[in-house]
Structure formats: C-alpha cells, structure tokens
Image (cartoon, rainbow, N blue to C red):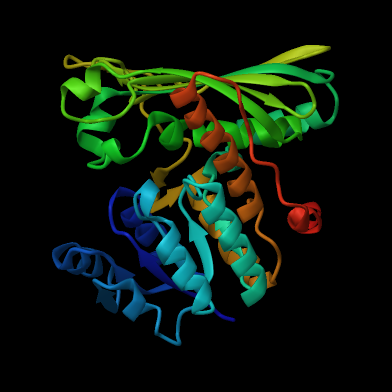
Length: 352
C-alpha cells in the first residue's frame, strides 16, 4: 500500500483539521469528503484539492477506493457513520468521545471484530510528550502506587457560545473530561467502577444553551484510586488561554503535576495578555506538527502495518462507560456503577 486512501465525514473545525493534515501527509490521500452542507463540501475540496465531495456519507462509502474513514461529526452523531463505515469494510478513526452510550460502543466493537476492521479513537492527548513521560514515570514505580488524582479542563465562554454550534447537545464532561478520563485510566492502569457527580446550569441556560456550566465528578477505579474530574466552559473570555488544563497524580512515594495552561509561551501586547497553544498543533515550515498530527499519522501506520492502533475502541468504550455513569449521577444525585467491560472483550482488550 503506497498511500492510505481516506474519506472524511464531518467538515467542521475538526474535520477541516483532519483534511488539512492528511492532505499534506505523504502516506495519505484524501479522496473524498462529506458534509451535510454542499457549500462546506465545496469550500474544503477547493482549499485542499480533494477530488470528490458528498452530502450523504452513505454514497461516499459505496466507493471501492477508500481504505479508511474519519468520523469528525459532533459528539452525539458518531454512531451511524461509524457503523456504516465498518459495514462497508473501512477502518475508522473516530473523534472523541467515542460514543455517548455504552450500548452503541459495545455494538461497534462487536461489528469491528465481525468485519475485521479496527477503530482508533482520537484521544490525541496521549501523544503529548509530557503525558507520555508521566505514563513512563508512573509505570516505572517512581511515585509508588497511584492513590488519587485531579484533572481540570475548563474552557472560556467562547467555546460553548461561538466555537461550536452544538454545545446544547453535549456537556463539558463529554467534550472536555473525555480526554482526562482516558489519560487517568491509562496512567493508573485500572478500570473505572463507580462515579458520583454534581453540576450547575446557570450561565449557559440564560444564553439559550441547555447544558451544564460546570461539572465535578469523582470516579473510583478498581485499584482503589479515585480521581476528581472538573470541566467547565464559563470562564470569562478575558482569561489568557482558551482552556485552563491541569492534571495531578498522587502516589504512595511521590506525585506528578502537569499544567498546560501555559505551553511555554507568554505573549503581552497592547490588546491582551495570552498563552498561545502549540503543543497539540503548530504550523512549522508550512506543515502542521504536534501531538494531534502524530495521532493521525499513527492511524496510517496501524493500517499499513496491520497492527492494532494505540488507542482502541475498547479504550473509547471505557471512557464512555465512565461518562455515562457520571451523567446518571448528575440526574440521580447518587453513586452510580460504571458498566463493566463485557467478558467477551477481555481477550481483545488484553491484546491491545
């Protein structure tokens, strides 16, 4: 296989990035893109020189010259195109969160096994060098046994009111904490078993967006470790970074702190003070570099080498299970059990 032939479903903020990165990659060829809006299809095709475009992904999936599909639709709309892509014999790269229900996640894992195609979930934070180093530090026993953790990922109002148009269809936990739950589960090497959460709806509801302003959830893992996950998107837009991100792991013999609010650069001008972001993506010599492009590149390597991706559908399913329990707890006010991984997935999970 010279190049992996890719189709992209969903051409919003993330779909645009996927198209840009893969169009410039020597191991990939974007042969088709799809969006519900024809004008968006035409714009992306023109911008990146993509040969064909569609407004119906089912028509795109009829093509015989596609090896893989990227699903970059909004959070709540991942299932149908992922299922259709697998049924058409394509590997799939799915934006986070994988799914918004465990039943959908389980159905897709079974389908992927039946058709012999894999799914990679785009938890691109795993490709950040600091988070890789954290994984190695914990795994080597340098901080002892992980006891507890804390993860904060809070956005400014701009994200929920202007950056995405579908904030009312999701929550800050699905949109933001999905990354952090994946990282903590990866670091502590244990599965989530129960969750309890509290949330508030004030600011965004007043603006006509029916979702939580802030959610705090405590998740207990099978190892006994527990982690508090905080997500919000009501910081004032005067905050110097679009996101305030901090993670901590406390062990029996040490701790880790990872503060991504400032990614090494501070800029002060007559207009504002800011912390520009560059670790996930940064344009260097005309090409996007960073953790996100590396995540996409490894999907290509998995296809070319016929190996399991580094972040599998099982990983995505476990994050979905934790988030489903968190949102049940928001409604009931009680501690909610996390749906356990089906036994039939155990061998698959161990091999990933």
